[in-house]
Length: 476
Image (cartoon, rainbow, N blue to C red; front, top):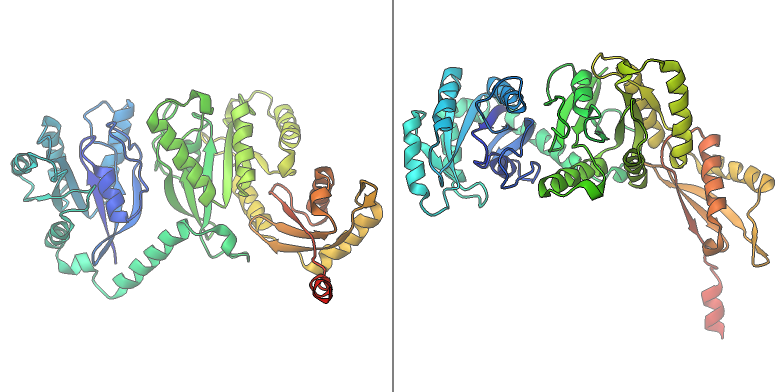
């Protein structure tokens, strides 16, 4: 039975660095700029023999509720309510600040057990800042260096002291089993999706939500899960980290990844935005389905098409969500126009699922998820070699390969080598001479014949070696 730990503190005290240290992976973005983290992030963590869930939070700031810092503070307050234990993090190098004392009072009123973490304790002069932490009245400060991994044994002992051994180690023997399950889930995040060819609806489906800034990605995820889990607002570029959210839809386990808005490369100058976009690209590579959120009022800008092309080249399965549909005056006319544009502008994934939705009102969300499930099944589909070669016979009779340099190309057989996405191997006489136009023809014919709309299809051309060629050379 695991417990939850919320890491809180003012901006730039090293909360995300400590989060990454406990998780064992660099999940949260870390930069010298204050206020990098905005959403709260939950992940399985380990501190020696202690297994728990850790929550990374935004820097605690005193601000009006309507402002962005105010909404960030509201997310942190939710994390405090959810947690069983609080790591109140201070910067030992700079010492106590007035905000530290203000927020210590809020933590004290929560009634939750607290461990004061004096981070950056490796710095020169940090001893004085650590001693100042006694003024908070929250107990003994624990000096640590999240960046260098120092002081973690003392932190473990402080956790056990704050929660008691029974709570820290679990009230029964299920703790080890749950920890093993958590580690398996962590490993699953970075497993190559191509390693598992068969369709299995018992595993969590990984879905990344991507798009340009202010398209409504975070609002869409909040609408799907039915709670204000992610920070939203009218400001563009609120999301910075790729935040994962576990969710259950009609008995199917899903892992949703919210990502930062992706602008054109020429417009990205700040290091932090570069890191955010790289984090989003990593989420795309580890996802199975990618929901591309388009603003229905200004759809199919150049950046939208580049994002879609990237997803298809990575072999992920795309689904388009035309968001902000509640702002459209003539929905039927626009929908027909958008679907025609989808087919014309994205021919490399012909038949891609495109659904009008409104994250603000909740319209179309069930249809969107139905499209996601259908696309995921197609992405995992497999066709037997017998069916493929019967299809190939008809193709060769109707439209054989062209002659190149006076010699006709011969195709011998085709087989499916992989799924996720579907990949086929075509054995032919001269792979290098095969025109790309004929390869596209084979791909489109495969898509139509075996009902595989909207997913990338890979075709690899191979030549079959002459088994007697080596023996002939030896006889010479």
